[in-house]
Image (cartoon, rainbow, N blue to C red; front, side, top):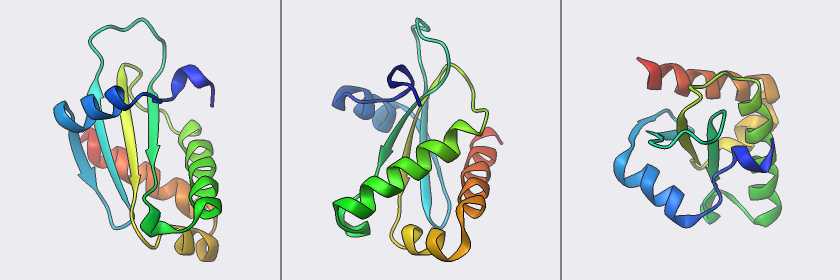
Length: 114
């Protein structure tokens, strides 16, 4: 995932949390917010993995896997997204596989579009 397609600043995360909408599933929470200025092409994603999920190695591995699975989806181009991981996701991905993670991301995106 290119850097231009990531949320990195705290104020961008805050804008999505405060002004956006959200949906949740057992393992993921998705917040989204439509950008007003559409200077950039494509959606931007921020990933939040709390310390409850695991140590830094586990959290960073989850972020990499989520970004990879996210790139295979086709979310709305003008939106900013924040994907928050809930406890238990790393263990579930280890036991069920990467394809299962892609399905979970598709599921949360589908709920967001409904």
